[in-house]
Length: 177
Ligand code: GDP
Ligand code: MG
Figure 1 (cartoon, rainbow, N blue to C red):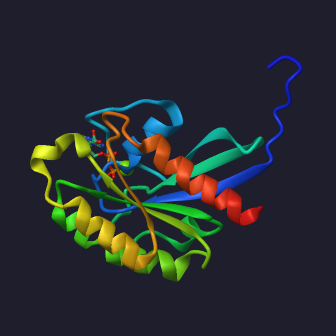
Figure 2 (figure 1 turned 90 degrees about the vertical axis):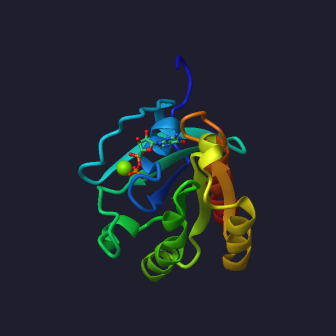
């Protein structure tokens, strides 16, 4: 950008957690590159992707970490959570078990991450409404009880993915400012 400044005011680390195949990697692909793939490979190796956005005239680099296919209980290492100021905790609205496991993920998050971490519960795959196995009401109730933000998304249709990250990053921004 000619004459422009590429100064970064903040870097916020945000982690994606949740069972395997709920769509974490595709949510990240949608947010970071506006891409989606129906035959995404299970993630190999810890990775993060970044996207820089502007929040209240400041440039914020979001560094979004994706699990390395370590979604088994307790397999995600504490290094993954270290320094994270936000988390998207993802389940698949068509797979009840992935929602039932959310309480474990929350427990894990709360034992490893910073006390002030901003957490959003994300119910993904709303494009598969006819296969829904978790009601919006059940998830909203859980989120309220646990004091979490909550949104339903579709990485495939690009529904609410931007909103989910925006809400988390804006909340983090407001906490540090
Ligand atoms: P991860 O293991 O949580 O990272 O899940 P992936 O991102 O690899 O996605 C697992 C499978 O679900 C892949 O076949 C994706 O294409 C598919 N998937 C991810 N998000 C969506 C979505 O919003 N809608 C639908 N229909 N499929 C999705
Ligand atoms: Mg993945």
